[in-house]
Structures are given as C-alpha cells and as structure tokens.
Length: 223
Image (tube, rainbow, N blue to C red):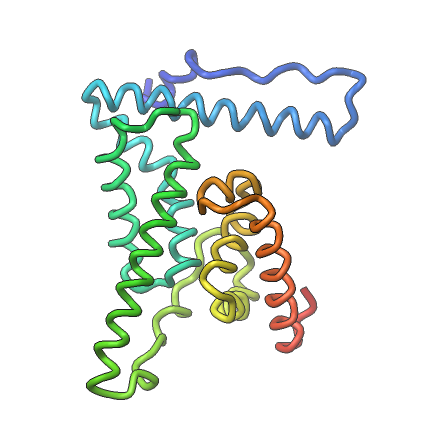
C-alpha cells in the first residue's frame, strides 16, 4: 500500500445528502466535504513532516506543485518558472514549523506564491532599470513568455489571447483574476492571501474582468 493510500483511514468521508436539499445545496455539501478531506490530508502530512518524515513533504509537493506552477505562470510568465516554484516550496519547508493552522496549508502556500511573485516583479523592475542604461529595453522583451502552454487552465485556442490580455492588467488586478477565476480560490481566501479587504477583492475582480473582456472583444473574441 502506498503512503498516500495509507492516509485513507485518517481522512473524512462524505456526508450523506439530505433528501430535502436542492441540487445546488447538495453540490455545496459535496464541495465542502472535498475541501475538508483535502485539508485533513494536508494536516496529516504536515504533522508527519514536523516529526522528521521528509517523504511526507514530497507528497505535499506533488499535491500542490501544479497549482503553484499555474499561479506563478499567470503572474510572472514562463521565464524562471522552475526556479520560482522551487523557491515557494523552499520557503514553505523552512516556514512549516511556524504554521499554526495546518488545515489552511493551501491558503498559506498561495500567500507564499504571491510573495515570491512580488519579489520576482521587484527584481525584474530593477533589472529593467539597469539594462535601460545600456541599451533599448524594447528590443529584448518577452518572446519567451507566450511560448509555453499554461498547464490545465484553459483551452489552447484562447491561451495566447488570454495571456496577452492578462499582461494588459496591472499586477494587482491580474493577481485577483488569476487566483479567483483561474485557480477557483474563494474571494474571502483571496483577500487573506493578498492581505487586502474583501471589498477590494470584489472591486479589483470586477475591473479586471471588464478590462479583459474588452481586450478579447477588440481581438474579435466574444468572451
């Protein structure tokens, strides 16, 4: 039996649906149950990590690395993506002993991803300033960013246009749109990850969607 399979006896099971519940309520119950199982597995793995089991951290990495990679790709592009993903999990490994609520591991990991993306943005801005003293920055930019496919987020047909549209957004608006609409993180959790009020999340999300919709229309695509 695999290490992950051995967790099954420690994980929550689905609650039976109430016959009086509507289909939407049943779906919500199932979603909550799935989230609870996810958080419970993470908690078990974290507890094992803190007991010195490095294999459990490898399992945490396998469970979450795709979503971390997707988020960083949307925020930072393809350049140095592998290094950024490694930096997120390195910070997670170092910070794991200080994680107070292990059930919120995914939120905590998104927050680390956001911090890494911000650091990358600042470093990129510094590099651009330094390079602008030597030659025209415009000729060097961004051939690589749109070449790599975004993993499992949207149909390939729209990938290029959506990536270009995201680049039209401010970094703050792009972050809210990526986390909520592409990664399906609830708005309240997005607020926690970014450290901003829920109302600000709603406002940024509205404006980001509107600007992206306008961009796609200009490109002849009906969103």
